[in-house]
Length: 306
Image (tube, rainbow, N blue to C red; front, side, top):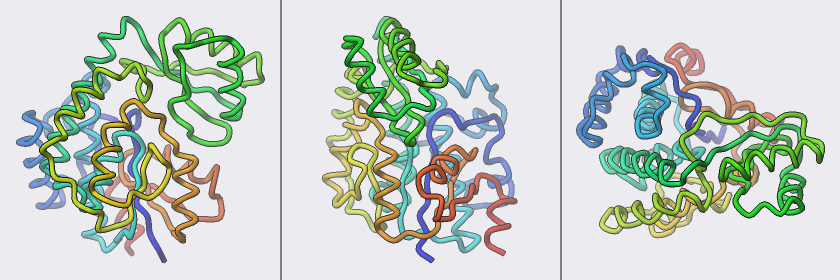
């Protein structure tokens, strides 16, 4: 079996996630210590003792997800679940890059902490921006509805599945786009609880700041196949990975294309490495003939490895 690890994004977090990995693995405890030192914050306290409100703050969410997902990957390997490829959704792409050997875990944790801080600040500077999930309307129909409504400050940010996308933009244009999409046939529009218009040009402040942080960071060529949100295709080199790492902040997540690329590369088994089962559901919507299962708890990892 050719196995691909899928790392989820912001929104799947919950207080206490990953505690079972921490309590049963010396290597996971060392990973949390490394992450805390790299990010200059007590991640054990944040993840295991912090409130849901604490974890919803972007500067906390992203680094919390990164360390728990890296811990889940490490635990999976300890239980002999070994990937040949990996991919991640939004911030999940960072533990995927570390898993593929593109970045050290220390660099990954430091950069994710800064990414979260910059994106939180970009949201504050936007003067009011948000995101909304549009259900039961094809991505091209959403794009057409936005264009026909003449809305210049809203974009499709996440191409999740053929019937689910997320739009991102100013509060006024997102509200207008929700109305336009419903008129075009969307079943629902669900406003997301986020601090800004992620994966859109509104994140330009974060993009510019983050690009500067990457200049002196070493990105190695991937040791495992790893796939990009920006292109939806396999990343060929460390140099490409570095360029896309910054562009991802202002670019849409092309998850539909990414899933198709993983399937076309011959992977016949996927595992969602981290909290929740959002990516498992999205995978099943596009590739129902290829198995995908969540591995966000020790019980699930141990069950798979038996």
